[in-house]
Image (cartoon, rainbow, N blue to C red):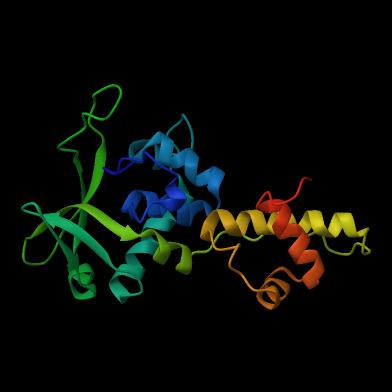
Length: 209
């Protein structure tokens, strides 16, 4: 998507294109972001077949642009074949446009796809713009699984199941559940250490469900 070949698990890729980052910010969960990544940048701008604007994706573009201008996140781009970082001052005056990929041989249909380009105030144009995936997930973490309110505490098995869901979502976004300490798990997932340990073992496949 957006000039970035997705040939591995996106949550393990070191860098994302601007379009991939916008898709994540718009959805903040794997399935929704994956749908946009698969459709490509052209389709991500629209919400349906009637070409209604995808407001969440457009808002994500504004959000990411603000983070780049403030220096909260960094991005690099190619200029004359060399990769360089665009400073926050460059982003404050940069113009983001779209262009066709120069190389698209890896695409099954051989057709080009749109990608973001940035031109700074000096007229320097950068292509193949990339941001660090870990930085995106830090600024815009995965949505937490919402728990129903106003219900009495159920059996322990239900509690473990709810913690499992929250852990699965967290691990998909960050991938560091295995190394998390018991006290950190207790605080983050609002459950006892014993419950957290049981849930983590099931999420990581250490015990049978």
